[in-house]
Image (cartoon, rainbow, N blue to C red; front, side, top):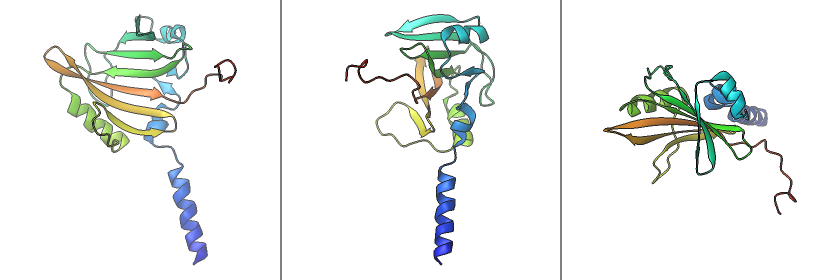
Length: 166
């Protein structure tokens, strides 16, 4: 009996330690760009973008009409966002028009149920090995524009207690 219990526990913990679909798809990066890339490296892959800064956060915005999640996209873009060290840490994928339910249903199909977060304007999926994914809807003219954000929340920044002032 103990042997069966031990086997069951080992199987449970090994299954729970396996990466989910979010990490399997996005652990190395997105759209052919690795997490931690510089703006120059992203420009090397997507030369037709423009750099914009919002509240000190640098973004590189690229026109992008490629289908995502099997949803056709026209007149849309991808925003690459960089941390204070100039490293890629998030990507926002915009969808045109009122496609929020299509995007939400596709995300649920491929990545499972979202987290229940009360009083939040975003639908967020559980953190998966340092990768976070969430969906928001932004007003755009007379419609709502869904934006899917994939973010690498794990930091590979060098940390020095003294340099940080601690």
